[in-house]
Length: 259
Length: 317
Image 1 (cartoon, rainbow over the protein chains, first blue to last red):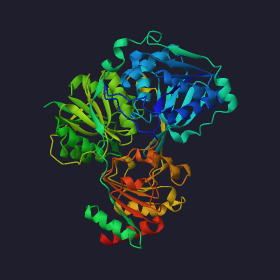
Image 2: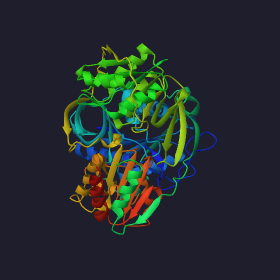
Image 3: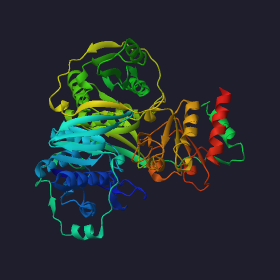
Image 4: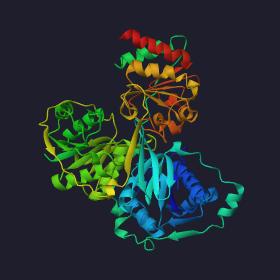
């Protein structure tokens, strides 16, 4: 089985994240980049499926040069090879253009299964997996907390508000995973050393047959008009419980008409 | 005024509160038209949609629309966008609502905005990003604006609409039926409101200490008619089911009232609840970062404070 895992480099949520004042895109230079957490679960699931069914795991990432750090981490975990979609023309792409560019790259790479995290910790739009399924014309098996593959058929448990749905489809398919699905492995020393020798192919937009007028800031279907840091919350009232803490909260709730 | 399509969220024939919020919001920008996907629309549901301003109710009553994952709903909306040329399409910013919005955006070559917490003239949307750290105004530049609006962003207000029903025959592509739902497993317990749309959420964290002790969190939530949430520490410890996790890798909630009991308030958790209108924190540790967000905080043992609070609430009703 030919599995492609899409991973994204995102700013570390522990650091202060900013938008650039010039073009209102994420300031990637101001922060440390890490692998989007849910994408690590996607890498783990791909490795597990490979271990059970054989095949190959390819990592695909889109982003500037620094994103190679993300590729190295996935390779060190055990992925076989990587494709880095990197081109200055991609800067400022929104979800629609990102999904288009990623879909073009995926068509070029070829796949039985695409796996990725259900959302990223930076934009948190949660739309990319569904957009990829739409663009690739493959079944959408998103929000998976469990994945089973049997020959060419695939079943997932899709997380819902009331529990889960069992969903069936045939490969090829797009799967997105939630954090419940597994426990990502740590790269071993051996894995880290081996990762250095694994092939990483860099694709520009021409290589992946991506139309320049469909990507980047100028093509974006939506735009940020204005932004500002959120005003700090006004300091609240903090009291020490002296046996009447619950009653005091009740007073507060009553003053706000909740009770 | 131009029509604004609102995708109805419904469970067992009941219209969810978020849909009434979206109809209220749509009314300030155009003429709301509700879109009901799937079988089971009731007279009550129709009356409710009309009571909150739906001028039209488009009904696509076939099983096919709901027996497959997301794609059929996007095809239905895309067909309506082509037929009715609405000014915008609004969906609830739930995990599924956002997926529908994403596919619809690709199908109609339109921009999409997710997690809007407000929407103004010209379809300029307010968003709160980076875990509540930055406020953004965005707008769609191409196509029909598609906006996923966070539950609890608007107070629902009744205003009668004509509620004229129009059946929609939707012809689904084979592709839309590719992922088939073969079983729905309901695990939610009790009659609590759904987490992402609850006006009141009571969450427990590491400080709760055990699965059994979540009973005191549940009792407080029930006394307020609220939903129960949990921090990642609590769901990782398997004290509470994963689908109730609030935070960066869980649900985003934006309730009128959020009560955090035994939750330290790590950035991971804050990302999922920071836009709550009122925040109450109960924690033993006076240094817990959750107190920086709290409108009202109690430094104390939740085992004492929470039951006392529940008792006080019961007394007052």
